[in-house]
Image 1 (cartoon, protein in one colour):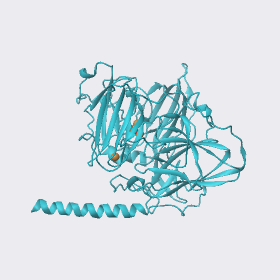
Image 2 (cartoon, rainbow, N blue to C red):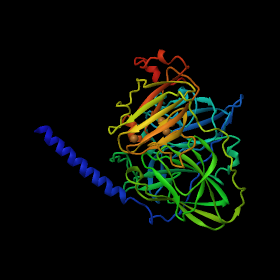
Image 3 (cartoon, protein in one colour):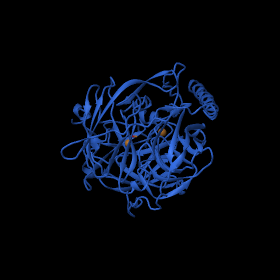
Length: 491
Ligand code: C2O
Ligand code: CU
Ligand code: CU
C-alpha cells in the first residue's frame, strides 16, 4: 500500500512538474522587450609575452568582481582578467603556448581548453585542480586545424556554477586556410558568446536550476552585453558563435530571413561554405558564419524556438547595423579547409554509450578514480551515442569527430564538419567518427560528457586514458586513491 501511494504521488509530481515546465517554457521570450541600446562588448585580444624560445606566454587570473548588465544595477560576477568572461586568445598552428592561470576566486576551480588537442595533463579538466591562491602553468604546442575553441572551468560538481558566474573565453586558432576569411578581429571577425541568464529583482544572477536541464534564463547576454547592437563597417562579416550557456540551445537566424554562409563547425573550417538561414547550437558548440551586408541596412540575430526543453523560447540576441559606407570585402573562397573529412577504417573499433533518464552514461555516474575507456593514442573509432532520456549533448576532450548519422539519417547540413560537441535529441542514436589526440598519459584521464552543465555536474561524464597503441590491456582501470598529489598538476 505504502509503495503504491508513493508511486501515485511521484506520478502526480511528474505530471505537475512536466506540465508547468512546458507551459512556462513555451512562453519564454525577450522579443519586443529590447531597445538594442548597448554597444556590443568585444573581449580584448590578450597580448602574449614572447619567451626566448618563441613560446607565446599568456597570463590569466580568475577572480570575482561586479558588472553592470542591466542599466543601473551591479551584478556580482566572476571573470578572467576582468569582471565578466575572459579575453580572447588568438594563436596560430605551430605556436608554442604557455599560460599562468591564477586562481583568486576564494575557492578551487580549474580551467579547461575546450576543443584543444593537447597532452592530457594540460587539459584543465577535473583532475587539474587549481586551489585558491595557486597558479597553474600548462604549456603545449598548437597542433590542429584553425578553429574557434574556448576555455572554461571544469571542476567536478561546480562547472555549472563557475561558468554561469562568468568564467569563459574564446580561444581562436589560425592557419593558412582561416586567413581566406575575414580575420580582422573586432572589425570583420566578431566573437559572439551567447548566454541566457536569470536575474533576481535586484539584478543578481539567479542560480535557480530547477528544470530537468539546469538553469534556463529568460534574458540574453552576448559577450556579457545586455540589449546589444553592433555596427559593422565591412560588406562581409565573420561571426564566431559560441553557445556558452549552461543548458539552452539556440536556433540562430536573422529576422529579415537573410541567408549566410556557414564556414566552420566546432573543430575547424568546412571544406566548402554552406548556404543556410538557420542553424542550431547546443551548449559548448561553436560555428562560424559569414554574413553579407548592404550599406545602411539593419537586421536582428534571433534564436527561434526549435521545440521543447532546451530548444524552447524565442530570443532576440543582437541588432546588427551596417554603416552607411562599407569596406568592400572580396568574395569568400569556395575552397576553405584543405583537411579531409574524418574517416574511420573498415574495422574501426565501435564503442557504445547509453545516455539514460537518470543522467548516467552506460548506467554509471562519473567516478574520478574509475577509467571507463582506454583508447589507443591517435585512434579513429566509431562512437555510438544512444539517448534513452530527454535531450542531451555529447562532448569528447582531445578529439575531433564527424557526425556519421542521427537515427540512421544524414546529420543536419549545419553539423557535417569537424566537431567536438554534438546535440543528441531525445531518444536519438548518433554515430560519430572520432579522431583522438596523439599524446599518451597513464595518470591523467580525459573526459567525455553531456555539456548540459547540470547533467555533467551530476555525473553524466566518463573518463578515458589515451595510451600507446597495443598496451590497452595492460592499463589499470582505477587511478590510485591514496595518491593525493595525483589531483594536482605539476607546476
Ligand atoms: Cu567544455 Cu569537458 O568541456
Ligand atoms: Cu572540453
Ligand atoms: Cu544531458
